[in-house]
Structures are given as C-alpha cells and as structure tokens.
Image (cartoon, rainbow, N blue to C red; front, side):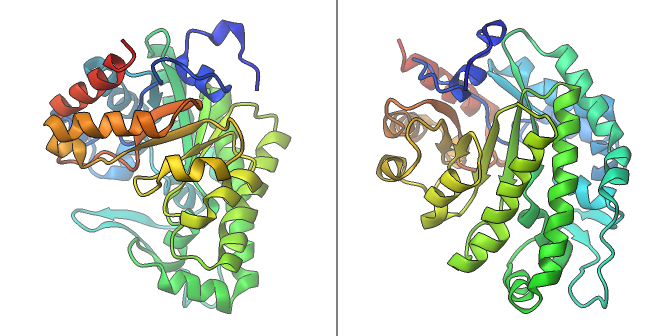
Length: 349
C-alpha cells in the first residue's frame, strides 16, 4: 500500500502502509470510556446507551475527551457493534451490570433479518458523528471507523446476549444454511455501514472479531474466515480504499490463516498472542497492532514500564501500532495511560 504524501503527517496511516516508525503510533481500544471521569459525567446526559450512541454531539464529545488528555495518534468513532442488528430491526437493550440483551433468534421458527439498505439509512446519526469528529480532530490524528465482524454480531443475534457461545456453535452445526444466510445479511449490512463511515471521513476501518475463540477448524472457516473475506471483497467492490485492521480476539492457532486469507491489511493481536513466536507464520511485513495487557493500566509502576518494553521488543522491526491486547477497563488509571504513552515515546529517544 502506498502512502499518500498529503497524509504523511499521520503516523497511523504510515504504519498501515508498511512503514516501521522509530516511535509506533499509539491509540487504544475503548479509549473513550468509563475510566475517564469526564466520560462518566457525559454518559449521564442520555437515558440509555443506545440513545448515547445515536446522539452525534455526545458521541463526538466522547471521542474528543481522551484526545484532550493524551497525545494519541488516532481517534476511534464512539459507537457500538450492536447498532447493526438494531438497525436491522432487532430489539437491542443494555442492562446495567449485565450487558446487552436481544431477543434470540435461536428457538424462533423463522429468522426475520431485515433489509441492509434500510439499516444504513437508520444509522445516519452515526455517520453524522463521524463527520463531526473528523472536522474537530487535531492535525496528525487519524480517524478510525469500525464494526463488529459478521460472526461476532451474529452471536448476539443468535443467543441474545454475550457470554458463553456454546448455543451459537451448536446452531451453526445444526442449522448451517440458516446461519450462513444470517452471516450473508450481516456481510452486506456491515460493508455498507463501513462504506458510509469511510464516506463520512473515516481513514481507517477496524473489524472487531471479538468471539473468534473456541472454534473448530471447519467452523472457524465457515463463521470467521469466509464471512470476513466476503466482507473485505464487498467493501472493495463498493469503492472503499481505506486500510482495514482485523482484530480476531482469541483466534489462537488460526491467526495465520486469518491474516493470510481474509484480505485485511493489518492484524490486531490480543494479549495472549506471543508475537515474537507467531510473527514468522504471518504475511511478511504485515503491520501488527497490539498488545499490552490492559491490566497493566490498572497496576501501573514498574510492571507497566516492563510491559511496554516487552511489547516494543516483541514486535521487532516490523510495522507496529502500539495498542492494548483488548479494551481498556473501567478500573484503569488515566495517570497510568499518561505513563504508558511516555514510556512508548521515551523508548525511541
């Protein structure tokens, strides 16, 4: 991938184009969130989480809050992966202390899946937020749009909640044609959703494959590899040229196949991945993103500094985007985030 000279000031885009920078670009998953007191105050302005996601002014402010505190190289849209099933007509609600709830498809006689074109129309407030965020970003900060992968979103639609995925895997074995039809709708809807984010100003797109773990080889191919590859093909057919980061959390020994077969431009690796050992099995010079343990932002101190040094050493001389191996937790300390960034930047001096 070639770097547009007009974007050379954005280190994230340079890294995604294959450049190894002396100091890797830094952003982290869930960088807008409950670990920030100003976010907790902002969150009170909407009656529920879905309303918050659909309020462009609130979503924009949530994105800007960490940028005011920390010298980050990227912002990521504030939204949720479950806006896609919600836009497809499914009832999505968030229960405090328990997480999202949907009416499960498993057990229903027929699966009403909704119209992808109408779904994207319903998501117009999300794209307005992208436009607002892009207009307000500091110079040199790239904007990331995102969506859940078809399989990850399907798991919530199938069983109506997070947690153990046994019921979803069983449904995929017992009803493969129905599950494939669900995934096909999600491929099309997600491609259009990401296309609209790109049109609104997102310069990078990330696909969150949050539930890649625990799948046998045939199911990993059916549920993760094929739908993700189809999503990338559809994105490119829609004219989307932005680089795509795939984050298959828990993919384990399937990681090399995911990197090689899905068509993603860069690979996010989770906390459990021993990067130095798996790197030889991955495509040469593929940019990698990750993978500091989020708990080190709770602990801080010497453990945090040692963790940062270990990550920087593990990624070697390949293109690297410094990130966490999963999202930041509500218990993390903003002061520890500041120390993490200083440690990353100080390592290059």
